[in-house]
Amino acid sequence: MNAKELAQYIEQTNGESKPWLLVQLRLKKLQENRDRLSPTEYICCLEDIHQDMMNLGEWWIGREKEVFEEGR
Image (cartoon, rainbow, N blue to C red; front, side, top):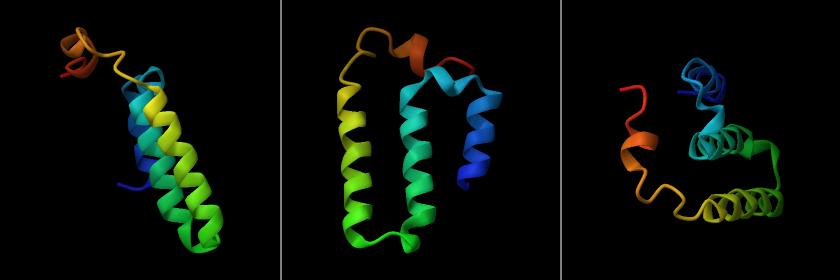
């Protein structure tokens, strides 16, 4: 799945409110553009995405069924 397909999936499943999907989209876009970035730029972008992912924390604890099984 490329970034465009992932973005379409996120839109079709109302995933804009699911931050972990947006992190996946950012990672996919970074992967697809890696050859256009210097190693320093790539690492900087990757660190930024990682920090955003870590900032998500454990907000989902106790809501696993509601959050992760929605739409199944």
